[in-house]
Structure formats: structure tokens, C-alpha cells
Image 1 (cartoon, rainbow, N blue to C red):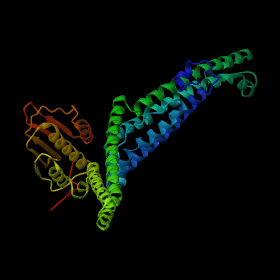
Image 2 (tube, helix red, strand yellow):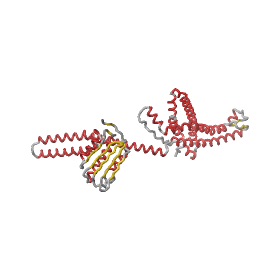
Image 3 (cartoon, rainbow, N blue to C red):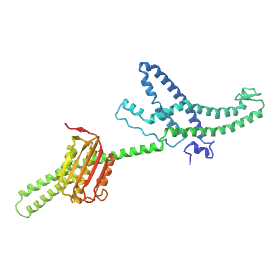
Image 4 (cartoon, rainbow, N blue to C red):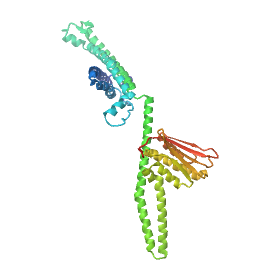
Length: 431
């Protein structure tokens, strides 16, 4: 099994004969070059921005300098693949509220990751790249110069003497070849030193530019919440599509069939055929009523066209228990909020009719402080539980997706009170 990073390669046999020492050299050399370029770019940008700040032109340059860590971090994540094949978890980036350079700029400047990456860019430009260059020079230059001692003695010293890295003089060939052997040993040790340095640099980069466990968990939670909202929106859109297809397709065909059977019944002479047509006409009428109830249960058209208040009034009119409605909503709310609130009210009224033994129910609510609040109250026997087959558990999950809360109070003997709160803002206000 091939090592995934230079750390594991160091402990594996055959490290010196593998590509990992060369990859470590490439990582450190490109790091030294990139760090020098970063230092020059930052110094030039800060100096130019400071000089031109008196004529306002320099202020945008200084602001853009604060974003210098973003390209540096992206480049470092790509360079990291030289010595570490495992992907670096990228920090979660917020989406700008609108398109255009200004929303993007303000969003980036408010993110902690932007300033963390700027700090890494400064560390990289001021400290890390000189260390990379020093290690490469020490681990390669000294051993290679020592290995080249016989060659230097034969060419530069005319076979009489050679200076090894200007530190000591070699005057005999045995000593020169001994220095070459020593250089090979130092080169092997240097290869390990380069691997250790590259591994340490890669680990530091991963820590500074990667996503901490807590931040990664927060990002996952945020993405999970967003995916749940998207699923709810997609589910509501699919319900509306099914309702529209049934209303405009199957229901219209069934209406036409009912009218055709009615006309045929009128034209048929009395007898068995007329009786069968009457029976078929009645069955078609009942099927039409059942289809209308099914369509209404999937997603009522009144909710789409006229909003939550009208839909709740319609649900109250169809309830088996008399319902008083006092719902003040002078506008439209987000579709997902209206759908969730409507189905909670419908399920609550169905429970009142089936289980409570109540003589009367009441639906009240409104919008205030950025929240929709609804209450469904009945004068029944009480003792209701949200998880005891009431159907409210799934609706509570749906409300929670919208950051809302659903609470149920139903002491034995009543009354039963169901309360829903969902944070939302108006999408349309009526005069």
C-alpha cells in the first residue's frame, strides 16, 4: 500500500529510493518561491495603498490587501498535494445575499476564515518561506558540495587541493573521496530532514487552513438544516404540481363524464338502461366528490391563491365541530410557512373531531415580532398527546425545519391548546 503522505513515507522502507524526497524538495522550494512572491506582493500593495490613501485611490487597494489570504490559501491547499494526498477540508463559505462585487466583498470581509487566511499569508510571507529556503540550502547545498569534492579537486584545484564549502581544505585524493562518501551520507540524512520539514510544514498548513472539528460540525449542521428546508420546499412544490394536475386533468375529465352520464340518463327511456345510467351517474358524482376532497387534502387551491387566513376559514367551514376563527394576517407569508401552519391547523381540527368530544373549537393567531403564531383550542375532554397517533409528530418536525416550535397542552378534563410559532417575514402586504 502506497503512503498517503510524507510522514508515513518516512517510516516506510525504501524512502530514499522513492519519489517522496523529491516531492519534499519540490514542496519546500516552491514554498520558498511562493513565500517570497507573497512578501513582495504584500509590501508593494501596502506601500502603494498607504501612499495613495491621501487621494482615496489607495483605500480600495488596502481593502483588497485584506483579501490576499484567499488566493494564498487556495494556492497552499493545491501545493499541499505534493506531500499529502489527503484532501484538506475547506472552510465553509457563506453565500453573498445578492450578486455583484459589493455583496461578495462585504460577505468575505465579515467572515472569520478571511482574516484567518490573511494571518496565514502574513506568517507565510514573514517566517515560513525563509525556513523552507534555509532547510533546502542546508540539507542539499552542504551535502552536494561535499560530494563534489573530488570533482572540485580535479578541476578547480588542479589535482592539488579543494575547498569544501569554504570551511576546510582537502589536499589528498583519499581525503577527497572520503569527503564524497561523507557527502552521500549527509545527503541521505538531508533527505530525511527534508521529509520531516515538509511533513511539519504540511501539518501546520492543514491545521491553519483546514476546518477545525467544531467548525466542520457547525458547517455540516448548517448544510443539513438547509437541505431539510430545500426538501420541504421541493415537497410542497410537488404537492402543488400534483394538485394542479389532478384539478386540471382528472377532475375535469370526471366532470365531463358526470355531465355526459346525466344527459344520457335524461334521454334514456324508462327501464333497466335508465336505472343503470342513474346508478353510474351517482357513482361518478361520488367519485368526483372524493377526488375533490383528495385534491383539497394534497394542497388546497385556496391556500395557493388566497393565503393562510382564507385556507383556515375554509378548513373551519368543513370541520365536523363548529370552529370560531380569529386570524389576523394582512398579507402573504412564505409558502413553506403557510403550508406548514395550514396542515397543523387541519390536523388539529381533525383530532378535535375524532378524539376530543368537544362542542366547539377556536383558531386564533396573527403575526408579530417577526413570527407567525397560531393557537387551536377546544373545550373537549383533554388528555391528548402529540405522539399518541395524533399525526402531530411529523408536523412538529416540519415546523422545526422552519426554526419553529409546536407545543401541546392538554390536561385531563381539558381544555386542549395547541400552539405554533414560526419565524418569518411578510412576502406581500395588503393595503
